[in-house]
Length: 242
Ligand SMILES: [Zn+2]
Image 1 (tube, rainbow, N blue to C red):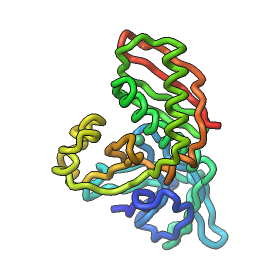
Image 2 (tube, helix red, strand yellow):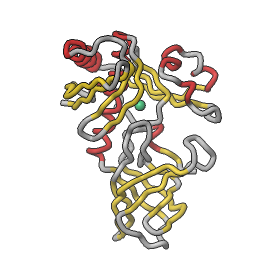
Image 3 (cartoon, rainbow, N blue to C red):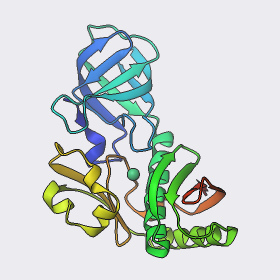
Image 4 (cartoon, protein in one colour):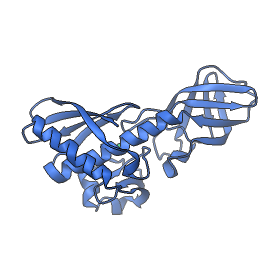
């Protein structure tokens, strides 16, 4: 099982690890800071190397179930490294990862804002290094005015410099929290007994395995670049960060 360093500290960008398995261009380590993708957040890129040996990590993925006994993160390299290597030093493409973290936190702030102000629930989200989009079930009329108001309220919430807290809760406790119920904590598989929570203080709590900045001030301000109606209920917003 790979120790997932990003779960406890999203800001780990360099680390050392032992090689568990090396096969062709794929490496499994005993610990890693590489996020394997999931929850709308793309997998990390970066490098792995030791001495003169060096390869780019072009992809990462999880094998086995998150939180399961055999959950491992596979790093996919641009070229194979010698199978005699026992230890490697990892480094993330930090600019890209930090951008994912800022957009991810912005999506959670947006989720809290549209729930508190419009009673609308999120149905999906996707982030990139330079933009993000969110889908939600929005019962009201979908006008440019409403979208402008969402942008204004989200930027106000971001500017309030709210701490982003990451912690674990026993499943039974999480299932009683109204905010977590709203964000569908019940969908976390039954086998997961301790649930990782990401809380934007006073605004939004979700069961989440992704990486986030520590305070909404690090997100800056957002600008909604497009909005679409994808049916009577289903609405989409795309935004960039400034
Ligand atoms: Zn999330």
